[in-house]
Length: 354
Image (tube, rainbow, N blue to C red; front, side, top):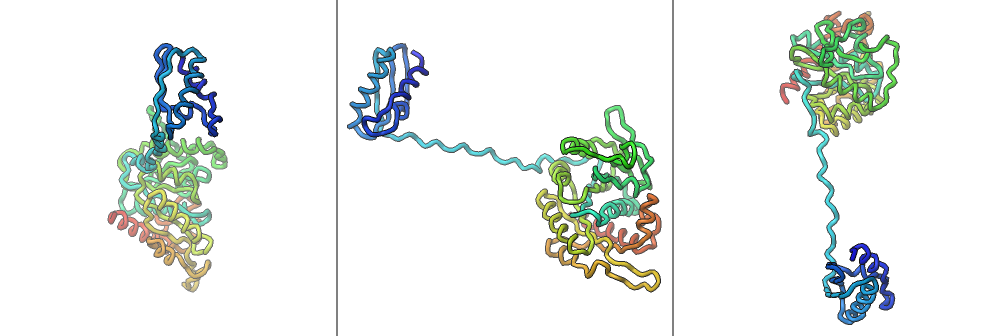
């Protein structure tokens, strides 16, 4: 006798005569079938229902071929099933890896575009190189790579090894990798969607042969708080983030978002760099705060970080950037170059204190 047929019979046997909407299957607690003999255990809260339930069960089961029907009753209600416990949530940051041959990874970010983030990233790389460190620069802004232009690497070639590793070119003693070096021309747009973008980013992070060990790798992130930053936080051990802003209130609003985003992906924020902080008139030496009185230091204190430095507006910064020479290498006596060198000193101090 098939158990499925027995179960279907019990499910179709209602108990409306005693004023309930249950079926015999709803009351069943156990069942055993041996040939034409059936044993079932039924739940019954009161003995007054025993005869009714026994007759009902025997009648329907014998109607489908059972020779003997043995019935036992229990007054114990069914045990409440414990809801399945959700699996322990995996910490998305436990699988982060170190980039091979890199001692310290620094991410340079900004809450919005147009604040000179890449200028800061390139000059920070140059300042660290000037201080005697081995430095690499990784342009992770896939849609707007400006690193090759600012470092004068537009005509440099990327070489692939037999094991599909990319060897970055070197310029000003800095090893550089950017999607801009792999495009047919600098005006070729990158129109990748998410999965392709993340695959390229992963290759940039882990399939670059940087050669000898680097003291610092500067990762120039795209502006905003987008998926690239989150992916970076979940895949790579980053030693610290530097957030670039201008003194404008609209930029400082995005600084707060940037700090909170890095806190969520568990990347320590080393501090804030205020770019285009002021303008010094070359004729009079007078300082003008074109974007208004700076509030950056207050924001830094509010979010338990520090102002790493203020970089003034100087035309020579953009002039030499267009020529592919960071200002710290081109004109070390400028206020901007001095500011970048001081910022590098503060970052080194912060990193060594960690």
